[in-house]
Amino acid sequence: MKVKILFILLTVSLTVNVVIFYGLSKYDLVEKGSAISSINKSASTSTDIPNTSKTGTGRTNTSTAEDSLTLIDEDTIAATKKSGYDYIYSLTDDQIMKAINEGKRDPAYIGEDFKLPVSSSANSDSAFDYMGVFIDTPYRYVAIYSSDLYENYGRTSSINEVYKFIGYDHISFSAYLFDGWAQRLAMELKQEGELIQPYKTDNNENGDIKSIYFDVNDIDFREPAYLRIYEKNNPEKYAEYKIAFEDYVK
Image 1: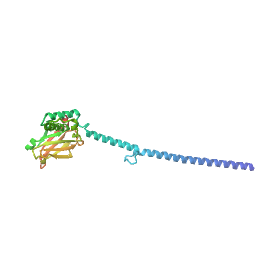
Image 2: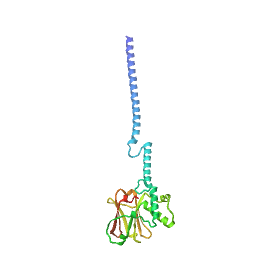
Image 3: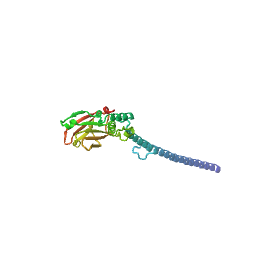
Image 4: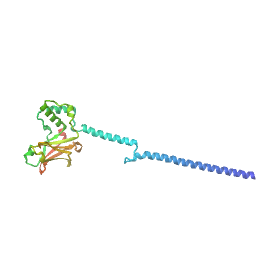
């Protein structure tokens, strides 16, 4: 009888130990699994955040590198525009030589091919009738420079010399007037009904040339524009010129 009781107690003891061991092992595995799951989830979250962030905060080095590449690309595009590529009035070396030779042949070169046609006028003033208005493309600048250089010094300009003053980041328009009239007149440019703001206006010392300058990025050279010149004290007296930009590519 005693032996039977001892056997029962031993069996119960072993069963309890097995249950306890199984419970602890399962608990330990669950806890470790949770910890591993938390680590994986945390790692997954830290990987996903940079890809979904739109504010730029907390981004990874890879994202920053991508941003840097974008900035470099934008700077490259801006530099390319300024250097003349893809600009309607950019000049190849052959075009520069053509402008140099054209100016050299004419000691009084003014660039009649770049004169703007009058589209409408509301005045009977001789000053407006006399006025010649020109678009100042790089080609015209080069030809005028070449004409003056050869006429005054008997020297032919070189391509490298011309490169020093050619600018592709702006376009200007010039009105040739009677002496002193430049101060009395104003100029404005409109395209598709919108007024384009100039970054500079200029009168020469004699007051017989008035020029207005625009950033090329503010103008759509595929569409026509209208240049209006009028008296500051009497805007009803004006002359308007239509500009078809492609007509002045040479």
